[in-house]
Length: 274
Image 1 (cartoon, rainbow, N blue to C red):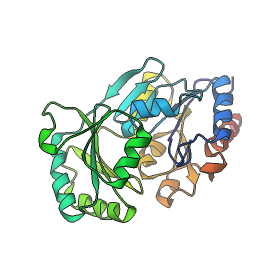
Image 2 (cartoon, rainbow, N blue to C red):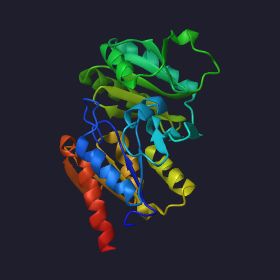
Image 3 (cartoon, helix red, strand yellow):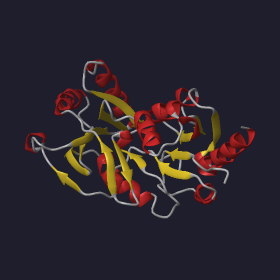
């Protein structure tokens, strides 16, 4: 079959689904065609395993998925984590530094899949609702010392996150055991160094013994750049930032018109030319 021994990984929000959190119908149909013809399809998302599993429940996912921006590799068929890495608690030094200057932002910690909200913003409430995961409210002082953090998030209005981004880029250096990245206009994340969609794409390809040239990836935002650069062939969603488009082989139609379906058609043409 044409897609034998290939993997396709897709970002969810803004790629597989619109920001209304609904899977674009053309994408669902194209994914079925891809998997029925030998391909392995999974997602590569900043979402938790719980949230990702809920989003992909009615599409043909037959491959482990990258979750929490590559901080975990999750097998939805077995409901099992195959790989996980965790954030050094020293990253908490950023919290007060940010909120002293941007008091309106929210802060969430993903503690092994459970959202721990230590500071609310309007965007925090929205984020918790669409993640639809278990969450608890803590103060930073109450957080257990032995908790395992997948990541921390700052949530707020785009102009607030602009300021958070500038502050964190001043404070975080290459010597720190974590890095920062903007994953949506209203979300800014602190992640362990090994939590990287590109690194976990390579891990997954090795797990499944698929050559990297047979791994395809599609995404739409800055936290997808490493994923797209690591894949054998990649696509940016139409309308993605130029920095994202620059690392890809193809730019698809806009998300709402079926970006993943467009890329699958391109993959088929690419394979036929080999």
